[in-house]
Image (cartoon, rainbow, N blue to C red; front, side, top):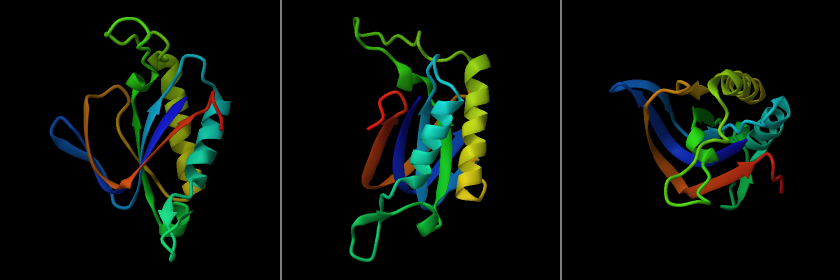
Length: 150
């Protein structure tokens, strides 16, 4: 499971030209689910995302987490994060999880992030054509791979 976490000052998600989700300060989390991912990957990533200390403290150092800044989360499924580009120029998505496996993991990630943040998070719609606009604050972007913890 791969998460691309972007620190944002605001973000919006539109589906069919309609505003579906909006957050102020917080994280936009793009989530790619691999065919081999399990609930353990959800636990690992949700803990890492909630614990990320990438907001500035009084001295300007990245030292505060989401709860300390009353931040929000916009979670968006993105199977293209699992793309393989080893052969040729056309990405292969063969290792991306099928919906019957991925949707329960995505829903569990939503539940875990909501529980750990202690407030509802915003989400996209799994499999929908979504338009995400955001203001990346910093810019700060962190990539976390549950299969390659570091």
